[in-house]
Length: 255
Image 1 (cartoon, helix red, strand yellow):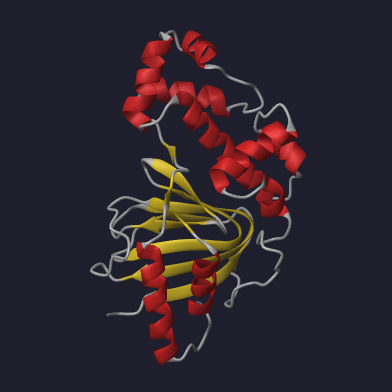
Image 2 (image 1 turned 180 degrees about the horizontal axis):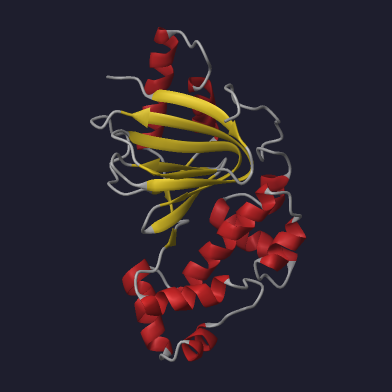
């Protein structure tokens, strides 16, 4: 079995890697900061707790939020520890994190690398697929609705308000969200708010201000929603550059 190609780099906030594709599968992981991954269909977030799996041949682009320590692992097209044919976000637990970081060490002995990669493949096969996805609207009507909400996340835009603004019934609006996004309007809005909160926290915004900027009335409500979605509090996510209490950076040069 071929060993994945691994690279580790530090990227500066605001960097954009333009639209491209690979003839191999790619796993994107961020031990510090946030990396937003976008295709023509949706956006995903790579962070310390979540990696993004991008199948071979998928057109995508990246945007860096906050100085980010990024690991990329390339798997041959026939080597598929994850069977999804579309990008997915997978949970990264403590062991998977350590395996990815270890695989990124320079001059790793071949035998040791083989053991680490085998363990990593096994962990990925057992990884839980996470639900945080921000889909891109296809229809003009739903695109208009999404733009109205994301233009100011501080405002508590209800389904009734949104339906009135785009001149449809609440039932029609609900049906559009389910048919295009596979989720309800409240589920989509929560994902969008958490997505933007992750970006703000990575850029150094305080927990309370990130919560207010993304529309939560109280900090405690923000902490509850963020914790339910991300599996950790926004405070622990923001507490150090990598959210772990460790300030280690990956090997490799800034690019």
